[in-house]
Image (cartoon, rainbow, N blue to C red; front, side):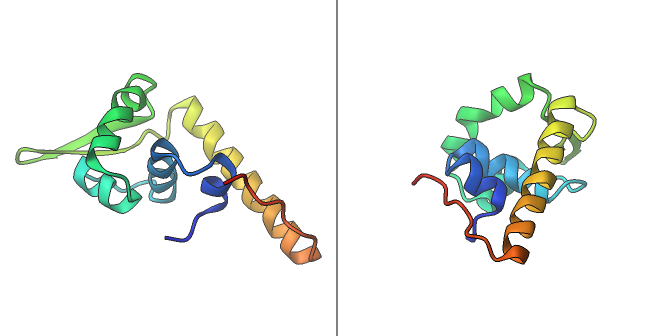
Length: 109
């Protein structure tokens, strides 16, 4: 999995992988199992951070498909709006660095 600028900047943590996946796939809804698989985090790690994402209203239930509940990022949430804005600015910053051929600072391991 190639890390996005967002992922590289904030580090390799399950919550960052989940946020990154949901931000990149805004407008689509997924089951927790799908999010776990696509974000490449274990289902146990997803459940460790999921309550926090719901408490902060970062994710929202979008619909139910039989017994499966589908979720999406809550685009109306102010925190999500700021994360999207930051992600855009971060991508803009890295694009400028690439175009100017300046070295890009690497994140800590």
